[in-house]
Each structure stands twice: as C-alpha cells, then as structure tokens.
Amino acid sequence: MEEMSGESVVSSAVPAAATRTTSFKGTSPSSKYVKLNVGGALYYTTMQTLTKQDTMLKAMFSGRMEVLTDSEGWILIDRCGKHFGTILNYLRDGAVPLPESRREIEELLAGLLGS
Image (cartoon, rainbow, N blue to C red; front, side):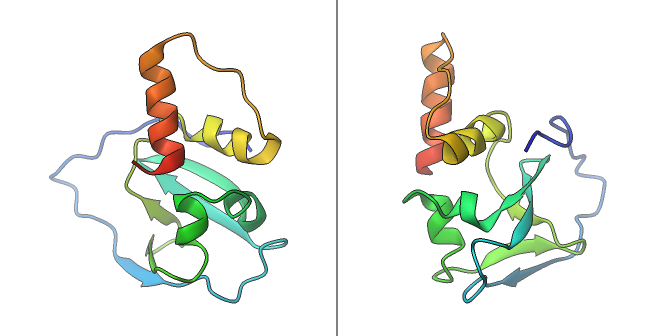
C-alpha cells in the first residue's frame, strides 16, 4: 500500500496520545490488516506482509514481544518512516529498485534489518 501521509514533526508542547501495549499472538496472518505509524508516517498493510520474511517486523508480530499502540489503534514503530514504504514493497514483492545513493541504501537496510 502507499504511504497515507508524509513525514510529520511532533512538537514537544503537544501532549502525546495515550498508548498501550498489546500482543498479536494467535492472529491469522493471512487476513489481519494493521495500521502502522512509523515515525509519523502512516501505513496500512497485512500481517502476512509483515511476517513474510525473518525480520524485526516478524518478531514484533509473532507474539514474542508486545507492541505499542495509540488510542486510535495505530501500531507505533520508533523508526524513521522515510523509506518504510520501500521496505513494505520489498516484503510484498521480494525486490525493489535500489536508490543511487549509498546513504539511502544503508537507511533501507537499517530499516529492514532493525539495526
């Protein structure tokens, strides 16, 4: 899916939304849609996409760890959302065109591998 909004800046004067932790253990990966807030960028995808490869995302949604959600049900991921759409496309299709810049390639790898 495509990014729902661009990157946003959060002012420290604005109170943070109420958050809670939850586990996704036992959900059906083939039919469960999830809403992700990755560093302020919003994405909508399936559990199947998020758990397709052995990545940090698969670990997050395997039930082995709890995830943070806001009051509207968006799953909060504390990463830069700049390249997350590319990462989702890679998980969906198994390939994406690489950017020309080495820095952008390193950012993509860091986002995918969780390092």
